[in-house]
Amino acid sequence: MSDQAVSSPYLQHHFTEMEQQADASKLGMWLFLVTEILLFGGLFVAYGILSARHHAAFRAAHEHLDLGLGLANTVVLLTSSFTMVMAVLSARHNRRKALIVFLSLTLLLAAVFLGVKYFEYSHKFHEGLLPGKYYSHQGDTVPGQFMFFSFYFMMTGLHGLHILAGMGVLAWILKRAAAGHFSSAYYAPVDLAGLYWHLVDMIWIYLFPLLYLVR
Amino acid sequence: MTSRSYASEARTYALVLAVLLALTAVTVAVAGVHFGHEVVNVTIALGIASAKASLVALYFMHLRHDKPMNALIFVTGLVFLAVFLILCLIDVETRPVVAPSQTAIAATSVPGRNPA
Image (cartoon, rainbow over all chains, first blue to last red; front, side):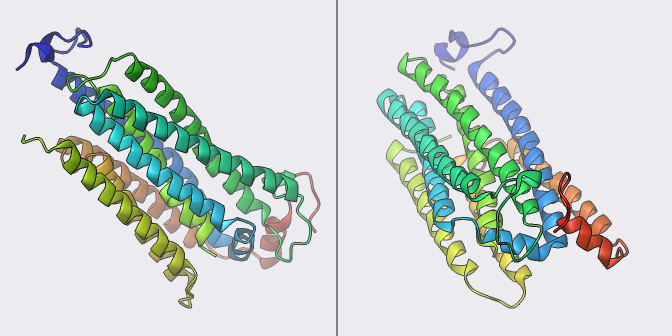
């Protein structure tokens, strides 16, 4: 095993070698991702049950969503997952410039996603399509659509907060990458940030068909 | 472990992205088709979503070439989510029907506002 693997400045005292440290941190991240799956899972289960019970209301409420914007966001997020995994690959192969470029692209795409979401939300506020007791949309033929929008804002809002937090993490990783911290011997933070980012993408992969496509 | 070249791995990731985008196009196209029962549309949509999620997990999240423990943790999480969903459905779907007038009021009244 190389000197760097044993005596890297990033090796913490409670691990004997870098590979062990990387494996342990990755396992910890996967455990956290499971808690995230259960968090959103709870919302999905609630949505499923309410949607089945108030079928007509949920069906009618779907019509207010813009499929084009949802589709655009799906493409944006899938591409950002690609740029993220390319960033991890670049770190693993010691390509610092490529790492910085791909991290920046991921951040940019995340910002685009939030921009589209802002556009969607402001349109909804304008139309009175708001959650629960704030629902004030006029001219509904099917009553009860406020329930759908309670879920819509809760689920996409929580997801959006996760995107925002992810952007914070990516910005920090980008700063460290620019400072030259990462190499093939030590790139676990990039790897872990990538895992989180792919999970956030995965959640949207399920949100998109359920909210925008089932009509 | 024999390490693949940068270009070779990049090509794999690009291929996965292409498949993900293609599946997205498919799911949008199929959503417009009416199969009679809406359950069919939902099942197909969730099936395609699961295919996409699997690709992300296996290739982008490296589960395919990683230590098996990570995949085990992930799958266990999904198993418990399935238990959660199934038990909730068994509860909710086997309840006796409530008087129709009560359901109508519950569906349209909002706290702080009178029913329409």
